Length: 449
Ligand code: UD1
Ligand code: CA
Image 1 (cartoon, helix red, strand yellow):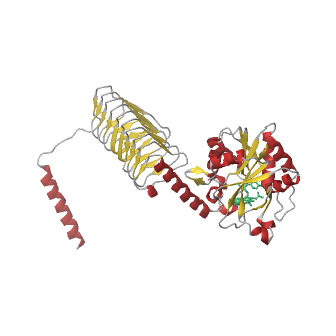
Image 2: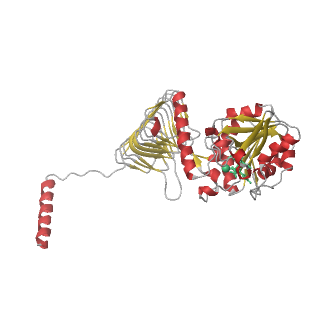
């Protein structure tokens, strides 16, 4: 059955105390809304509509990045969840099928739960949960016939407030039914808002059926404050670690490894302690990342080893059996099979051919203060320690650079390039020099007394 998803994300999130709209705060190195969109896209919806309001342009950019197929509509004034859905529905004009309404600030909803909602046999389906502390959640009023209505906390009687079955906010109904019910909403309630939740009572009054699908409370956790965001981050990391272990990844010290929403690690990879994954990291089976590495936007192939203390930045691509050692930073560079970069090196905007060895302290001087330039190093080359490669520059296959060289011109294949001052030895000078320095020290000390 065709499904369309509406993601509500217009609220400012006042309690975040932030200039940034709530749904753009990060969880697992991705904006909150990316999590809801990931669950939504996992069920392969025909359409996705995001309702934005506060800082809509920024929200639109994030949505374009994480879910390019989604449309964004603007709800200029936040008049309630029912009004937000009404703002989105014109974009679904002509769509026939189920519509799922999600919140952009609820990151842990699983795709399986959404599938259960779509599969449930009732005209309107609500995702509920048994709340440990029901607090201000809307309460689900049920009878033998199923779900009767949802009452918001503000409008609830003491008896209704005693109900622990709560509304997660996720709702599913046929597009035409939803459009008709939403069109009939009013704002005659304690908050003066158009409550989406009122469609349940309206559906029942029409003789339609309503049902509750339940899920674990943790799945429906919404983020309203920085404290909740911090708790959500801990929960996200705990799940990501457990998932990695389940997938056959070795984590030496799981509690010290931090994942991003899109981190992908193959079976039998080994991740040491204190490793941080930013967005866009993929690691093939059998690769090893040693302690204290920071990785983002990079790919590590089978058999490669990275770290300890390495930093891989966006565009770092390590082919099979590459070795990157301590205090090495790599940005926007491709390292072909078997390349070794053992120590204290910066490679930026470079391509290094197969089996080449990069000596300690090598730097690609890729930035001239205005533009970035490329460094090309061929296969089987040997870059001597402390070589400065002033880009744009090319070092040919099998070439060698002398330690301490500043390479400003291309090096032909097979050549040795020496770009350093010639050494001069002064026989016997060392003792004389020391004598002169000691005398100078004594003179200064005497002057002070
Ligand atoms: C809502 C539900 C409540 C449920 C709770 C779960 C209603 C009336 N109440 O209450 O039953 O228990 O969620 O968390 O639906 N939004 C818009 N436009 C608006 C208003 C809201 O896009 O005009 C978005 C918000 O950005 C947010 C979501 O809808 O992502 C929920 O809105 P919020 O104001 O937080 O609803 P609650 O009062 O928490
Ligand atoms: Ca809320």
